[in-house]
Length: 176
Image: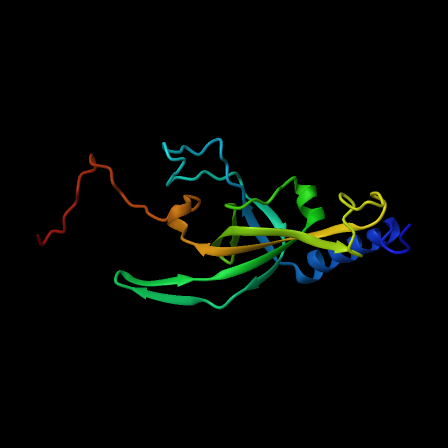
């Protein structure tokens, strides 16, 4: 039987983590879940119009890498990578499971998740897979790496708009 990592220790870690991230760090992001059932795909299971569910507000620890500018023939392009760390308890409470392809909105930028890692455990014991039972250990967080993506590709925010109604009478300036 393990000496450390019991339910009392886990309760302490849970309360300290939640207080630190919710009260002091206080960084909130919007997480959009990719809706595979509503997304229409072609013969090759590809699509240009992804559909996302209503966003969920989550607390996170965010680490942004430096922005990089790429200059091509068609103009400059901005790229940026980010790491988002979520408390597992928050995700369970909101009934939200993070998958590759989901989108996170942070500071009016959209980041598409490339990978997620779930290996931070208290005292190195995951209660779901430890042979000593589920009375010791605690899976703390899920860490995601993501890249910034264009808003126009996501169809979450309306980026192109204007008046395209053909029946409207066009009013020309008087001097023409």
